[in-house]
Length: 459
Image (tube, rainbow, N blue to C red; front, side, top):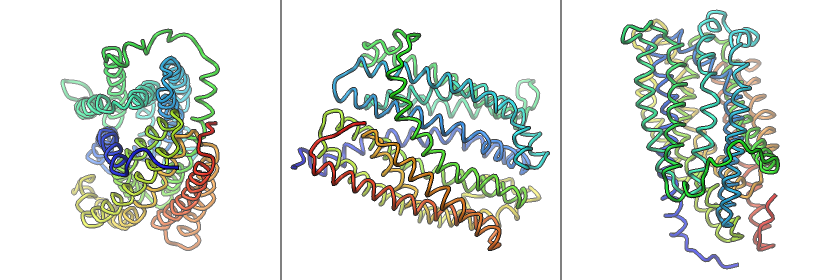
């Protein structure tokens, strides 16, 4: 089997697609980062309440990301096979799926205070988070529809427009957060709840902007992307669920490891919760860089799979792996060197718990610097497999590694071994290492099968 394109071609092809996606991912995470920073400016109590509230709804959120991510490889495969009608049907059913699931998520968000109390969180934290969660819940359907539209546009290898819309969204979110949380223009100061309202409105505006672009763009618009929007296609919906639900479980397995660790962090006090919220957000921001390369990998391998070019898919996957390795090592060094300065951006230096939060956050950030490589590699491995619709076995691998190994390790180290909050983060690192090794082996076995058979057998 001889590849038709050179290594340099795959490098630059990945860069051209990944850079805009990277800017988009960083801009998107900036919306949540702005929220966290503004919570910290309100006070440590607000930061702790917002952190635990976010961890309560994140399982719902990441399942939605997984479901909507299925839009990208299925659209890429359809476009690679020159089947634009099927691509449009994928979009239509993706919107259906996002809307229905988004409405379902409003119910637990509406009862967030009860759920937080059930999870044995501080009653003051649960009470403060209640209205914030309700206002965030209103925006969930629009948030998920935004993900569908962004993934669809990216599958056309046009990642720049979503980036522009997200940057606009960041600016809008900053303004609205200030307006509602601080009570500008005569409005009541809603504090934490105002941040939830501002973020929900931001995503509604972003959905409208992306829809306008899709209609006006010549290549996408001529396919009438929103044509027959009310027509339900059970075959395509089933396909989306078959591919997307395991992706959702995979994301839930990994993020759930962080979420469960964060919830368990509550037994160690408000300072530990606030520190883990900061550390988690910093790790999430840096993760956007390898994630962008991973998303580009899914799209490129999806196109190669649709055109039945296994040699192209293999080289695209290898190049992405090399790029992620180099980038995450650089990020690790940067995080370690500037760890104190970065943490202080999230805190009010006059807060009475400032020193306590710093004492927890600094070692957590050092651990985050260590696991950058493994977090990046597991992302690119699993994204390469998604490009050929291989999602079920990676989901099983992820659940076992993150929960069977990561969560249990975190509990054992933090409590019986008395490492405290730091033990939870060490356990997370162990889970990431296990997942990286197992998913890397899955990719290697898939590569050998493609070399042997010389063609794709898409599930």
